[in-house]
Image (cartoon, rainbow over all chains, first blue to last red; front, side):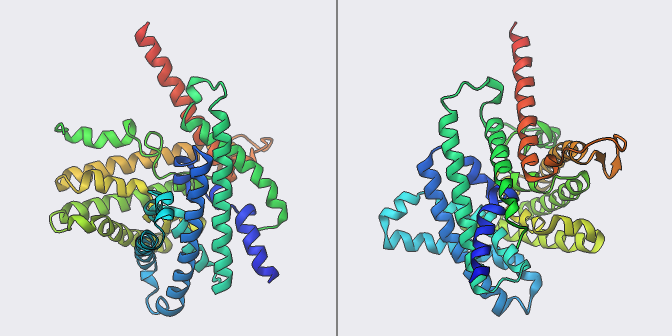
Length: 192
Length: 205
């Protein structure tokens, strides 16, 4: 059990997907303008990450032993169809949730955090529960980074920023400082 | 759409619409593996190869790919080339392959590659698509080297592994750690914005 909690904490803060591995930068830059949308994007991500973890575990265990060279192609196909199925299911089961998630759901397909999770999980040979906690930690970490970034940007809008630094340059420099702050957690231990 | 000349197709991607520095696409690999010039070079070349290969195939097959499933078809073609690049690097330069790790596989989800297929290769003849892919690939490589160069020179005091400043140089370790990636790209953009604004001001006055 301690092992699982450690995986969760370490992927959430010590090796945060966005701030330490640069995964999922597109939503990090794109939808971090408002705290509320950032939070919803984070939730959608957690959901898909957990499902991906389960699917890639099943693929690794039952299929890919026979054809390891097809790993990348089968992962990407599974992720793309998974997102499509989830989208249809949510639309049918809970239209309000579907409306809240909006365009974020299909965008998740090309989010590198999802494929990254599947590949890291395979490389580290996690079992089913370890993978599940790994996905939860990664999703919570993404949400944390997104919400932090969005709240800083909401405040930065009111600050007097020099014209040359507006836009992406400012966002990247804020991200650099955030990443530096997260390095403070490195004392907790090295990567699992 | 205005007809473009072949040289425009090529040069556009290199600088004026540079994938990383202007369009902000493909940021994950641009920041994750650029802690040394060698890694940047390997990543840039691998992406260049994948981009040219998939543009060639998408352009050749554009009349056979049904419109409804085009995105998934492009992804499959890209994934095939990434698998080839992954295995090629592993065989040719195992140390670099180990340093880049999972990020070689992640070339699949580099939005810049899918973007070129959707915006260009799926509509244009084969030759032009290859030129466009080569231009964008070169622009990506250039941006990676710009980031990787600064990070290696400041963070390890060397260039391509050769020490530059002598033994008394204290390396800025932060530059080769993750925050250095964000900061380096941030300051490059800052400098370019500043330069562009100054140029415009001069033209006005």
